[in-house]
Image (cartoon, rainbow, N blue to C red; front, side):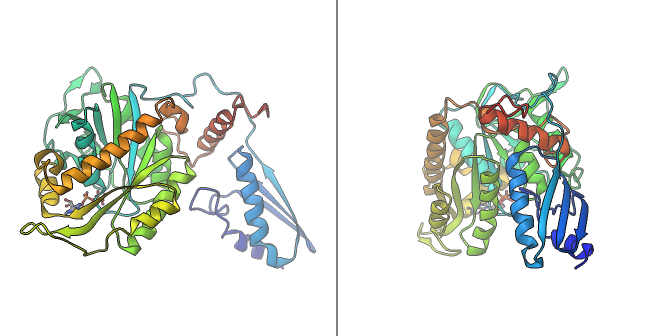
Length: 390
Ligand SMILES: Nc1ncnc2c1ncn2[C@@H]1O[C@H](COP(=O)(O)OP(=O)(O)OP(=O)(O)O)[C@@H](O)[C@H]1O
């Protein structure tokens, strides 16, 4: 048995809620081996008790076959009283009542199409709605809302959102040069998103939809933690391979304690434009079981329909331009279900639901972990200083 073997084995232990291992993060500071007695010293960034407990469990399981007497010691950041200038826990966009995060496990499943049609449907039901397009890898919202190429009005040092179909719209695509952000990573994306909330003149909104970048990597995790999210929506296609990706996205919401409003099954069946008959292409109704698994609902089954794609390409959302179509009615019902969920959580302010990070502080960083731990402590009734008063 060598120390190197132990370190190698520890490479498989992931830091809770992240895709990197404790070795990759550089958290394993020392390994002492004296015959069968092994002491591991970890220098971690979180003060949270559950992080320590999960690591103890995972490390013990990982090294169980080595037959060691294991001692695991933790070095954690000193728990300090909260700085008065910290924005932790402060709602950075108090004029926005509810933030809905629209995510998908992978690209091309119709996340932006769903965001646009749900947002317009919600506006048609009398809500004051905005869309923030955070999909830096493919910001399609401006085209789908028909505002691409429009000039942004700047008042003082703040920009006014564009408006179409009663919905305020702001997108990374409107503000950045083409191709500029594709190499961005967690902290940069988060800072940009926070600026899109604080430096854009959002009016009082009932609902702000955020169209997330596809996938569930560290960038998405960080982004989801940087704004106070009321509910998440997952968009998927019905094939079983897509559902596996969808699970990752739903797991992400669970990890971040974001309530899931539901799943949108997109490209579910095909409606023939000639005879209006609906036929099964990729499968239909497969999301019901997934919804049960995650204790949520299917908000709607949206068929593959040429009119949806045409509406997206031409900036004329189907829900607005063909309100009598089967598809538009399904979007309206989905929006109605979403609004009921949001209305039912009216007493909860969005800042209570999610921890938020100060601009420029990545949720993966030492500072980010500390803020998250403080927020969790406060939610469970403590003062947030880690003094053990709850
Ligand atoms: N139900 C549908 N029927 C027909 N076409 C659709 C449907 N949903 C989406 N599309 C089309 O599929 C393409 C991809 O959709 P969209 O851009 O909404 O996906 P996405 O998940 O946001 O992609 P990404 O995030 O990877 O950019 C678009 O051209 C859109 O018009």
